[in-house]
Picture 1 (tube, rainbow, N blue to C red):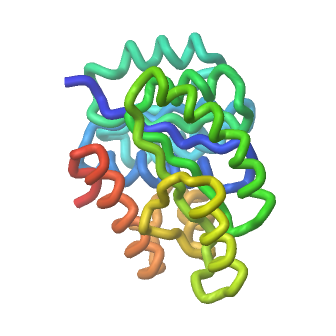
Picture 2: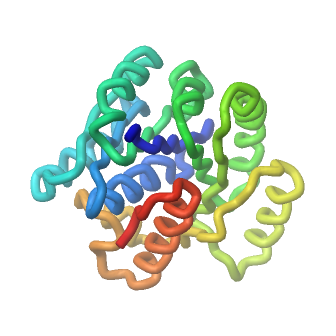
Length: 219
């Protein structure tokens, strides 16, 4: 059976895009055969994280890089029949590689931090998503990152996204926690770190994504 493909796409950098790709890849690899493709080059955050992780946890995770849309397509063709999940960390530019990632995916995740600048940048992604949906069926979801639920600004921005961007949002929101960067720097996921709230958020995220793809993504 062909792999389920998830792309993590956002035009603006610094939204937690690579962090989310690493979290999903590492979490799913506990039980599934996972390919993690870093197309966000030359930054290569996901590739660096995977290199650290593979020193200690080589099972179930394949890490590759793609520098162009053509390389990405070739990797998908190579990996799809031997993996359960493929996660693509797309570049923070709406270039051909990002468009190719969306065309190949079953689910597109759009990370969004609680700032107006990130919401404005995401608006440019809507046209691309609509063009993709004209050719294929793809689920799209916003994933809130660095979210402080109790603040007035977060509530106002959440409402602005709901009414302005008109993209569905995942119910799980990743909080503003040092655990995410601390775990990433060590080749881990927050499930393997000490912050209980981060663990709960990540587990809930995995369950939501798994339900959308009809696959058990997290134990």
